[in-house]
Image (cartoon, rainbow, N blue to C red; front, side, top):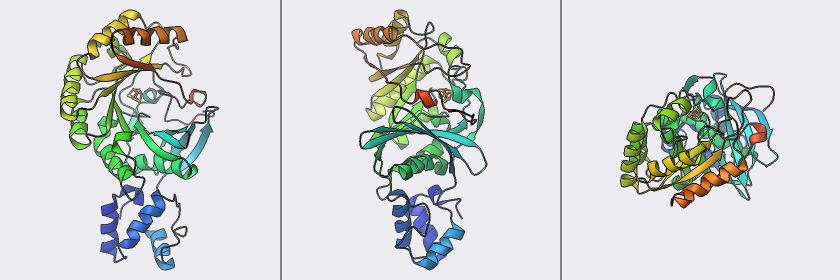
Length: 343
Ligand code: SF4
């Protein structure tokens, strides 16, 4: 028996119902009640016979995680701290945009990459998340906001998604299912520091899903200090991205966290423009979000503007990303595993 409904693909749930002798059409009802109508219990699924509701309540939990804490930002975004079945905690962020919303998802408990500017990496790596644990981050946010359609997913929370590709790919299938959440693959973005076999797997298994690459530096020497456990050199990475583009024809998004006095000079911008020229894409310049006890400082607005202007002058598509949720430590690089007293 699977750990929960969220652990199943729809076809697997239907197969399970068939094996147990439960009418298979009820599997699709369960699926739709769970994902479309955010039902959190079987008795809430009024189309199911009472007897089956009782059987399923004992045999197959709908979900396995619970919301342990909720932090709401002045800008409307929300960070949820979830407790998993083994007691570990992860965080995800819900970001509203009018009637729609984006969810930023974690893919691992902790992170093995250890970027020196990131709170998620500071606590080390514990384990990969299961597909169910990834899916439930979306489910909890959707259940809290049934009127806001979640139509964008970014796999940019805690963890390196391409080191957990099998479970991330499975979660994408569940989240993409036509009879459930039905979130389009083209509205999902997977981020990586440069896991080469993962980039190849993404191109092959999910060519419509967007790829974002966390670059942060345009030389290997600086990149090694910012991303100490990055498994690849910039040369290998750009080769892999050129292959990715040839296979998918999808433009790559380069993420560049701007750190005052570290990677924010015009010379850094010049090197960055030269580095990425062979791969069609755009640059998201992300002003560093301060983390308590962190060693880095946020760039000035003037610095952010001139960095972006320089890139644009070199014919690189570049934008400065607006900060969201930094008052609740929900912005990029601020998610962490340990639940502190505050956000
Ligand atoms: S920035 Fe991403 S890859 Fe780097 S330590 Fe944080 S979560 Fe891991």
